Image 1 (cartoon, rainbow, N blue to C red):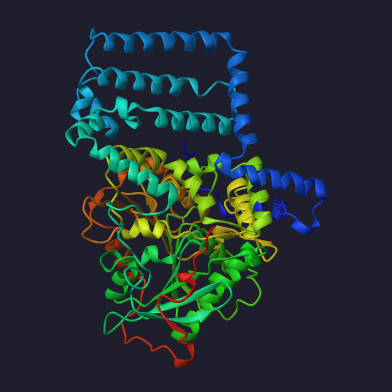
Image 2: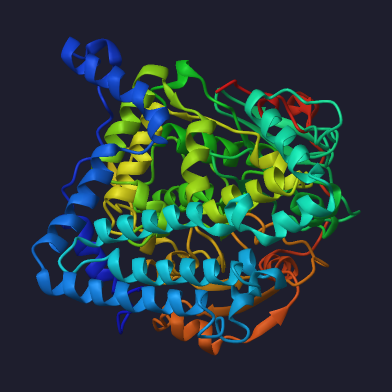
Amino acid sequence: MVKTPTAAPTRARRRRTVAAAAAPAAAAPPPADAEPATERLDRLLHAAAAPWLGGLSPVSLSLAWADWAWHLGVSPGRQMELAARAAQLGIDTWRHAAGLDGDTPAGAADEDPRFRHPDWAQWPFSAWRTGFRNAEAFWRDAARQPGMTAHHAQVTDFFARQWLDMLTPANWPATNPVVLREAAASGGATLAKGAKHLVEDVTGVPLPGTDAPARFDVGRDVAVTPGQVVWRNRLIELIRYDAGTATVHPEPVLVIPSWIMKYYILDLSPHNSMVRWLVGQGHTVYMLSWRNPDAADRDLTMDDYLRLGVFDALRAVGRVEGAKTPVHAMGYCLGGTLLAIGVAALARPEPPPDTGDLPPLATMTLLAAQTDFSEPGELGLFIDESQIGLLDDITKGQGYLSGEQMAGSFQFLHSRELVWTRRMREYLLGEREQASDLMAWNADHTRMPARMHHEYLVALYLRNELATNRYRVAGRPVSLNDVTLPIFAVGTQRDHVSPWRSVYELHRLTDAEITFVLTTGGHNAGIVSEPGHPRRRHQVGTRAAHGPWVGSHAWEAATPVVDGSWWPTWQRWLAAHSSTRRRPKPVPASMRLAPAPGTYVLVRHRN
């Protein structure tokens, strides 16, 4: 549960936190060529085993299991309680199987889409469904034992659900009535088609008679909004999009996407491109496109990403729009976290060196971006000292963490939808999921340099340094309470990466004015939510500068729901903080380096 203190922390208390902070910056792992032979042996062994373990630390998982087993083993009363619960649920399952009781209460079957089909109400499938639900109920009780550490309790509960999601009768052809019905009706054709899909996925080779997936090529189908690359360094390209209206607001919008994604999630197909929509509303938009790093970039740091990414991009915007023209800065996911760090560094009494020529900022927008990582949601289950040690072993040899290695952890967060339900449809029903621009983007993986990856995991997720005023930029700590810009923050209801209540905690960290939006959808689909998108709703409320603290639960209950996309709400906010429209400024010929989408976004690596 999110902690809800009765009053917002004062500036003085935050200042004392900064003064008392003595933790050093996250130390990078030593270079591979400096390690002793014995450590190298261990590292190579751990890295070689990682793919077989799903990239998860066996030590971390074993410690969680041991914590659970020992606390249960020394608690005979708890054992008796669970045994009684198991017997009760077993009797309930038997009674349903014998037809002595009805199935689950009316309407309950519709709560789980796996069992929504009416055929699940028929015996014996109804009995298997009841038995599975009773197994879920048992493990909800059994996975957490009194006395366990909170982290271990969360890990055991999470992986108990993973096993149950795998073993559900919906995943097996002999126990899924929908699969059996479709197989009988098609003469086995659905199973044969599903087998072809399985072979294609394992071999990567399309088979005759299967539908070729739709292609979404960057620069042809997605990322097609016209523009020019106006700046390039070893880490970023900066795209300035062509004006979509005769006049524009003078203050440009600078977008900082996360470095773990290709930027074009915000410039997908023309109908759902946030960039295209913004320029059509009279805004000049700049987009930062991160370069996909390789082994030579292993020593890039978080400070490098801030300096070469955010600060260099701001400086380039100033060269085109004018050094005195304020900028609306927007960051998405970890790009928003990096932006918040940069804004806090610029706002402190001693800003970082070589930033005096940056244009001023008008506002800051954070989309699904955490600044307090004390409750990071299910992603935090994969982050502890042992897990970071394993990731260091992986990245130290290759110099980066690959997109495929990263994607495995994210699939765990949505295993029911991304793995089991999808595989059931594709392999048992023979129904390929229709390709989409968002799916194509999600498969376009990126890498993270070894040192930067280590630093952000340790400093943000493990130590939560940004929220406690201990995060250091250029050797000096930063505090978000130095930020006085108006802030627009967006959280999404079903976000497993940046849970919205964690995003909301920004209200505790700064006294600046904050307009907060909670929208339907998840981490990606909730942000890519163009006007006209069906079934979209959002809530919006503004806390004045130095306003009182209101907890997320109270805010959610008191804030009315608005139908439709949140994009127009944000655009009106941007316009309210902008000046009178004028004709757009031309890009100097010397700064026209390449047409959008640039070259960095096209770089793909095999792993």
